[in-house]
Image (cartoon, rainbow, N blue to C red; front, side, top):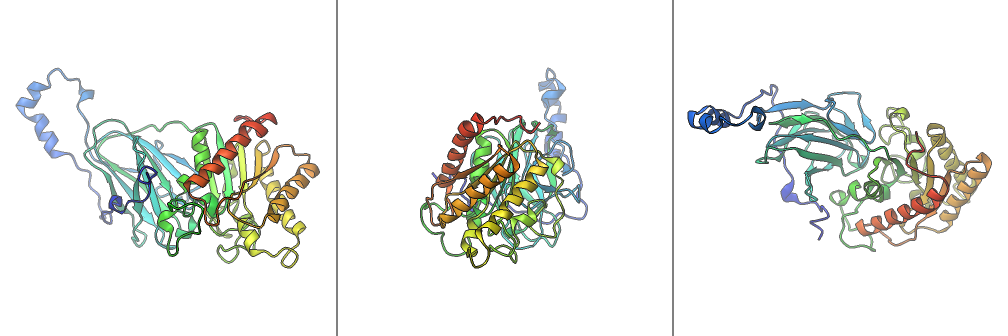
Length: 405
């Protein structure tokens, strides 16, 4: 069962070596000689040229227009865009019989995990990125494929606890084809480890997380945010970081860096480059923050409930300024916490709606089900609850997938 859900398989982790200084293009000599033989030429007199596979190996760099990117990508280096947030994606289609990826690790930490979904296989090829001292490494993904159109989705499983990686491009022995167009439905989610899919692939629900390093069990592809986006065939921008609180100075992420400091950044650091909000306009915004506030803030001692609510409302106001037409759902996920924080969020949203006369902002509190991070089944429950909320409450209040236009 867990194999079907894409649980990491160490036997599938593929790694070749550092790219040599000069990467020469090569031709499949065996095929070339075969096609040029008299017997083969005679046998193929009736074939049209397009039926003879083109197997010339080529390296295609990341800025090619046929790559389709989703999520907040840092394009400071157009030939090596950086993926920092979890769930960031590059998709493409190609012909040919083999695929290699060129990737580099930023060495912020270790254990950046990526999944590569090839064609209709639900079991991805999982890569643990290797340190390369800033140099790209070639990863063997597939060989011996039928020479036909192949679909590839590369997903960053882990959040910035494991740093970022750079996508340099691909090496194929066919052609890179135009990508499928983006969905017109767009979702953006701001959250913490729950939204990042931390420890989601641990196979025992309803218990504390296992001890030790759990990076290989984290997978943003199975967070409620990604599940919800797939159910609506929507594009997703996931701005989430494990340990992050809403407010600066609390939580467990990078000296108390809160989401209020990185909601507008290309990675979850206060001094990170600023994101250009004109690049992506969601129909639906989900704010799933508060879990790490609830476990690190003592209301009445550290701050008052109203001060925290003021910060929450300020984040809504900041996002509303960027997305004047989007619907916003402030929610508390299904991990155990002091239920008083549910009230803090619902009251903050009610105050914001009244003071700003904004009837496109809503609160949603999930039932608590787990003392550890939500597993796949529990993430699915949140996605189901959200979908029902969207299809009923939001739709009855005017929501549709064209509101951002």
